[in-house]
Amino acid sequence: MGGKCGARRKPGNGNFTPLKAGFSPSLHLRFTLKGLMGDMGPMRLSLTYRLFAAIGLASMLVVVVMALLVAYGMREGFSVYLLKGELSRLGGLAETLAADYDSGAGGWPELEGDPRRWTDYVVRQTSPDGRAMPKPPPRGPRPPAPFAERLSLLDARQQLIIGAPVGAAQVELLPILAPGADADAAPIGWLRLAAPGGVLSETDAFFLRGQITSLLLAASVALAVSAAVALLVARQFLAPIQALETGAKRLASGDYASRIPNDRRDELGKLIDHYNQLAQSLEATEIAQRQWMSDTSHELQTPLAVLRANIEALQDGIRTADARTLGAMDDAVGRLTRLIGDLRTLTHGHETGFAEARSTEDLGLILREAADVIAPDFAAAGLELSIEAGEGVLMRCNSQRIRQVFDNLLGNALRYTDAPGRVVAIVEGDGRQARITVADTPPAPPEEAMPHLFDRFFRAEASRSRAHGGSGLGLSICAAIVEAHGGEINARKAESGGLQIEILLPADGGTS
Image (cartoon, rainbow, N blue to C red; front, side):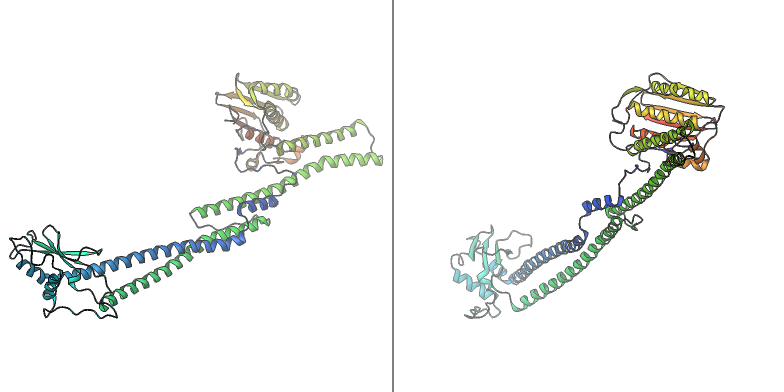
C-alpha cells in the first residue's frame, strides 16, 4: 500500500498506464508508423516531383493563358489603331461628300446603285494624284485593300447607300456633317470603314512581330521565375516532411530521445509538435516500463527470498516445521498473493470495463461497511476511527471497486498513523458530485515525497512500509479506480498534522 505523501492526480495528467507483460513500445510503434506513414522512401521522390509539377504547371498555365490573351488583345487593339489611323485620313472625302450632298433628294442619288462610280469617286478623293490605284500583282503578297473596297456610304440613319456590306468584325464610323455645321450637329451621313482582310503592310507586321516577341520573352522569364519559386516552395514543404521521415525511422528503431527542432507555425509545425510529444511520451513510457519491471521484480524478490530461506532451513534441518516457521512462510505467501492481486488490478486499471457493472449506490453505506470490518484493528492499534457519512450520497459506481478504495485508504491510515491517534473519514455530496476525505494524525510524509504520490511502489519510508506489509501499490490502485469513475484524487498535509486524501467523484460516475 502506498506510503504517506502528497500530490495531485487527475485523469489524463500524464501518468502512464501500467504496461502488460510482453508489451514492446518499439514493436508497437513500428506497426503504428508503418500504418500512418507508409513507405517514405518512394513517397519522398514522388512528392517532390508532384509538388514541383503541380506548382510549376499551374504557373505555366497562368502565364501561357495571360500571354495568349495579351497577344490577342494586342493584335485586336493594333488593328483598331490602324483602322482609326486610316479613317482619320478620310476627312477630305467626308468634306467632299458633304459639299455634294443633295438636300432635295436627301442623299447622293448620283452614287446610289452605281458601284463603279462610287469606287472612282473614292479613289479620286483619296489618291494623292487623283488617279485610280493600281491593281495588285497576280502573285506575291497582297497589299492592303484600297479604301473603296472597304468603304461604305450610309445615310443619316446609318442605312447602306453604296459600298461594301458589313463583313468584317471591326468597323469604324466617320460622321459627314453639313458644311458649316457644328461638331455636335446631327450628321447628314456616315462613312463606314471595315478592317482590312488582307496581309498587313511590312511596317505594321514588323511592329506587331516585335511586340509579340517581347511578350513571349516576358512570358519565358515569368515561367522561369515560376519554376524557381515552385522548386523553393516544394523544398520548403519537403524539408519538415523529410525531418519527420528521419525521426519516424529513429523512433521505429527505438531511439525515443529523438526530437525535431521546430520553428514553423503552420500545420506542418503542429505535426512536428505532435511528433515531439509522441517521442516524449514513448520515452517516458519506456522508462516507466523499465521501472515497472524493476520494481515488480524487486517486490517479488523479498517474499520469495523469505520462502526460499525457510525451505532451505527446513531441508538442512536447521529449522523444524513448527508454527513459527510455517507462519513466516504463510506471511510470505500471503504477501505474494496480495502483491499479485494488486498488480493485476493496476494492469487492468485503465482498460475498458475495469469499473463496469455499475449501479446506484450509497457511498456512506459502503464507507460504514468498510469501517465496521476494520474497526477492531483500529482499536487494537490504539487509534480512534471516526466516520462522518451523510445520508443519501448516491452515485453510479462499481461498489466493489469503491469499497476497495475505502479499504485501501483506511488500511493506509491504520498502518502509518502513530498511536494514540485519530482517523476521520467523511463522505458528503451535493447531488452532482461526491466528496470523500480521509485525514489522520501524524506522522505526515516529508515535503520532498509529495510529488510522488500514487507512483507505483513508492514509499515515503520504504523499510517501515515493508515492515507493515505494504506493497507500495495501494494509493496507485485508488487513483486508477477513481479515474475509471471519472473523478480526481489529491493529497495534502492535513490540519491535524497527518495526511489528507481527498477524492471528488461525479454523481453519474463519469458515464455521461
